[in-house]
Image 1 (spheres, rainbow, N blue to C red):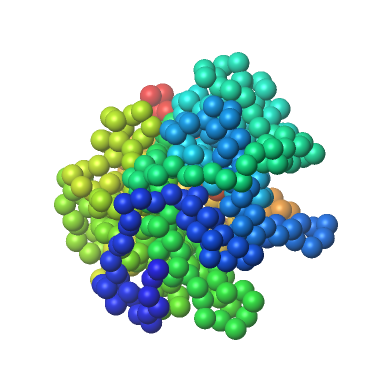
Image 2: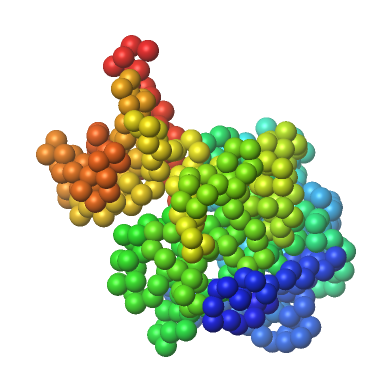
Length: 467
């Protein structure tokens, strides 16, 4: 665990990793605590219809052992992929831990996925089984015949007794597989913002790496709300300041990717927080801004955010795609595809995805700062900024804007929004075109899928030029 320190410099400088050769997430999360303090509360499930349901560490250990035995009886073995298509709840945690204890690979999937998205991920991963609810089972029923090696579903909740019966009918005694810290534990598909989703394979050691990242968020406030955390996209200075004013708590931001998560972050409790940035390097990691050849760029220069290997939270590789894995690295730097800028105090500012950076009249413009400014306008709910091809400037900034309820779009409002950005940022960053749209395409993790608007802007430009 991280030692409690009052300053970032000593916390980062004195940190050393201690990763055991043998490590299993299921054992570490449940069995260890069940042996030390069996009655201690492990999980609370809050529901609107009454008091929260409680699960002790002993119960969590026993039920995950029983479900591991049930999965083994169904033919699941070490290395098999078992998908989870469930809402948050006891069954979700129990299933995760059972899969890890078996040495199998958990494949968490979003309930929002439709049949096509599910089919792509399940087929790519070669999933043997899916643990889901009734709604998920209905979706899977439409695609099950197109999934080679698929053995069916286990239904949990929604009035079904199947999951509970599997737990009740099997022994609480189970000896977890002796997994090494580098053995695969889970596969998480990338969000697919710029290319088809890839299955990133993560090892058991990732838990130890992530714990070090989130330990620093404990706030020292005497109010009930101790901390507010944000990830997925840069929070932006406007939202950062609003959060501090509205809640009286400075938000902590985290940055990472499916392939290597929580490597940059902020911690207001020790003074490591600054509006408009995504924080500093989390202790135990090496993160830098590099150029295309893997060389460090200077302070204030735009480059790609990269993470040095080895790193406990780094993925093992893309599932059955060594070529894509190799392309992810430049030497020992794992590239993120995100552009960033580092300042002299160690803070990193997110600039934009490689494909999202706008080139206009020789300037390289990041969409994040523009979008942050746009959403500060009182009429704007959501915004995406992209580059639209232009014969004179290479690209011009175009903004696609979702207005707040009750606000009607008009040429006058578009001009006002454009001027809003020009006055607050600069004359080369403001959107020369503003278009109002009804909705904003988002990934399941809440990221704006800018490529949809980028492609749309290209088509618009082509229609004008005839290209």
